[in-house]
Image 1 (cartoon, rainbow, N blue to C red):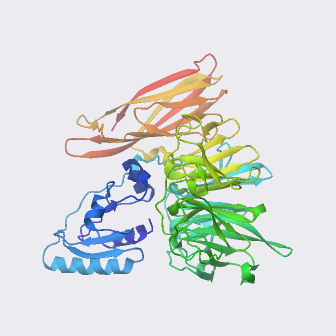
Image 2 (cartoon, rainbow, N blue to C red):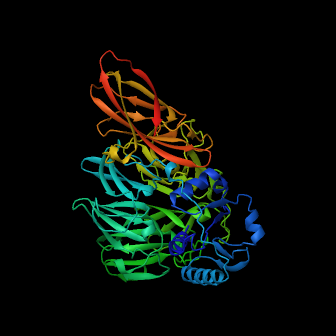
Image 3 (cartoon, rainbow, N blue to C red):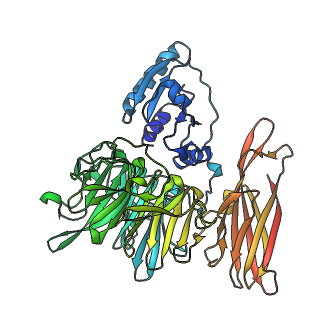
Length: 605
């Protein structure tokens, strides 16, 4: 993952016509990553623009003698080995070697200026202002009006603030990645991950900008409080704010540090890129062993920087492996964290920095391959690349998203026993997830909010009733109909007493030689108007052959249902992706049917 910025820089410097072709070979560590469907999701999530081969049997790995992730192999035009780079941090050498090699082989007339048509499969994603795209972390906000929900809409490079029924109050950032401070409309993020709340501000781990951002909800302004926008390789830190380089911050949590009679907020950072926990001191602070830090100082506080699963009483002697989620148990003065590459849940004593195991992995600090899906206590429990974590103070338990096992698990921190509570058909078939990576708790309402990342939705679990629903995202649609070459409008009438609306499509083409490609994914995504409170789509995204199912509530207004069709059509010699907007104006009337099925023919130009 951390090699991607170097490859992006290389591909921007040298094009295919220049003679450079980049091919990714995915030799999976985790069993979940061997699934081509999950690999496609990762390619889309990280905006990878070059082809990727799924080496699920590790045959390419063995034949090339690879022994470490990542490894870069540079080949000449006839397949001759030119160079091998092991590990990260070789951007300058890569650019130099490629530049020299291209110059040399061009002098021998061995480089052709041909192009290779490549297209990232973005048309398969639920793109649209009203849809989430690979949501990751989320957090509950408590205020005078009740509870609000903050979502890192990672694939759309934005932060959403909404009430707990999905009515969006603030959209911060936009669909295109960038690194810019300013008001909510003009600010830019790049794949934001962790979010946490302090008073009226939201702090954001702006992952691919390698920065910590602050959203002031009162002033309506986004500012950068740490990081330069460029990935660093500093394992110590100590500089102030924007002078301090960071490396892939993944999650955040606020710890209220007590020193004497003073309570001082400290921002804890899961620094996945350096395998450490850092702190951003928001005020002048006296920390462990009476170390003094000025306000704005950003510094490593736990972890040697070596990627390992080493617990230790000395914080800098401990080894972490891509920490990716944080949650603070304030009353216990402990931060629990998910150590994703060791597939373990671990803890830090916030009074002295001692790092301990909670569950998962094993005692060997060098073994980062002991993963699985087993309930049990401490080392008997097995997880697979967990990412999300949340503390339930009333129950003295931790909830985690066991991401690559597609489950939600619960840990009793007293007994260290970990068990599956939701997912993979438990407690029933409705509980299904695809790489969930974030979780938040409303302890007052006994609700869990889960970022179901590859399904592009947030799901709500009622822990008492044991039912699950998809949170509708009601956001003002800013896309205009002029953005689409194919727009279709339909009207339909349904009962004012509520009921169900089913929508199906028959797609044909104006050009007779165009046909649907039955081997390619044909997708739809649906969004509802902001005033459609009580209207819920069973799924926000689906296959063209699947019906769109909408449950509607009692009322007598006209509502708008917008459907985007992402389809692939082929001629004899080429395939073309088409995007179609279908708008249903739904009128609620007396004496109308409460179950309506609309099956329309869509002629695509």
